[in-house]
Image (cartoon, rainbow, N blue to C red):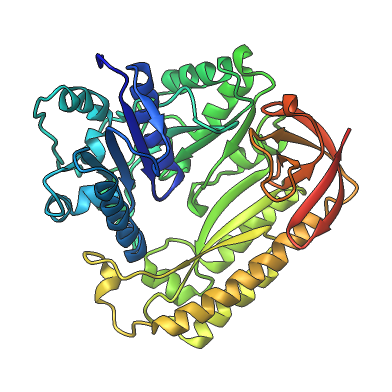
Amino acid sequence: MPHTCKTIAITTLGCKVNQCDSAAIAHALQENGYVIVSFTRPADCYIINTCVVTASTESQSRQLIRRALRCSDSAPVIVTGCYAQKNADRLRALSPRVMVAGNSEKDDIPRLIDSLLQGEQPLFTVRDISGQQLFTSAGAETFIGRTRAFLKIQDGCNNRCAYCIVPSVRGPSRSLPLDKVLQRMRALAANGYREIVLTGIHLGAWGWDLQPRHSLNKLLACCEQDPALQGLRLRLSSIEPNEWSDELISSMARSKSICAHVHIPLQSGDADILRAMRRTYSPEFFTDLVQRLVHELPDINIGIDVIAGLPGETEDRFAHTLSLLEALPAGYLHVFSYSRRPGTAAAQMPDQVAPGVIRERMRILRTLSDLKKRAFFERSIGADLEVLVEGRRERTTGLLRGITRTYIPVLFAGDDALMGTLQHVRIAEVDGVIVKGRLL
């Protein structure tokens, strides 16, 4: 416990799993009496939770470290996350004030900060994560500035996709036990959160490593039956194509709590590129999955992840991806550029695609995403929809902002007292990707 009020600034790059990890660190620090401040303000200590998925996020991580070093002449800068796991020595070389903690050591950060700010010299380590078998993340009970809670229930990945470095920095797939998932969900509900987003590196693989073996479908059934979780909205984040089952789709269709919204990674719509990526499904399999989901949940909003520019992606192969995405009933796309990652199989592949070509393909895909998003939003005009009202007003209009079960952001007039509550609005108009409604 610190003897005086100390300030900690935290910033996070990357995925929702990283966001959950940072929230858990912040929660533990607040429990110990620290004050969390904006990363742009002076602080007694800085924490940067990094990402390594692309060269761009590596560069952003280094920029944030240098910014923190400039903000104070003496404050320690703690670097954690996937870039820290991969390149600890390079980060330590930036400054004697840079301390590096690996992904397995994130839960130790609050204790290490206690020692550090009391003048001690605690040992910051980055352990080999390849043999990690237990799920160790502490979890958070509060999320600063958010009306939705995020709960990490799975970590790691057993796949070896040709382009991806995540397994080497996150370790093998491992799950939070069922009783602890329910315990953490109850705590979040008791703290007033009306929606919980379940996240993981491979969310659909939750429970496969547990004894006895469980499934995501089993977890959702337990949530539906838990008296403490009634009236709560549950949202699934990203589920791999091969991790879906007919039972999971049926559960979503029957459920009153599971939101009709999910991300599914496609990555490419070309069969040859999928094989080169080491993705274990075909374009036809993916198409059938999306069609089954839409048949069972006609209002579902499906976001599709796609990567532009994997080595060997010719114009014809890109055209196959574009054609498939145009035909699929998706609500939007998450478009990523291929980034050559040392240590991955794709880094050694011939026929690397020129950066300018990748940028043009990304532009085309993002234009398609905007068209799909607008079309999905326009389908809701005139509908009465439940929204979770966010904790701050939209900056340019001053209107309240709510998120529907199908992940449509709706702007509407109302009092601040509505923030953090579930309300019903009627969708009145769609202007591009701006949706406005009227409170009912």
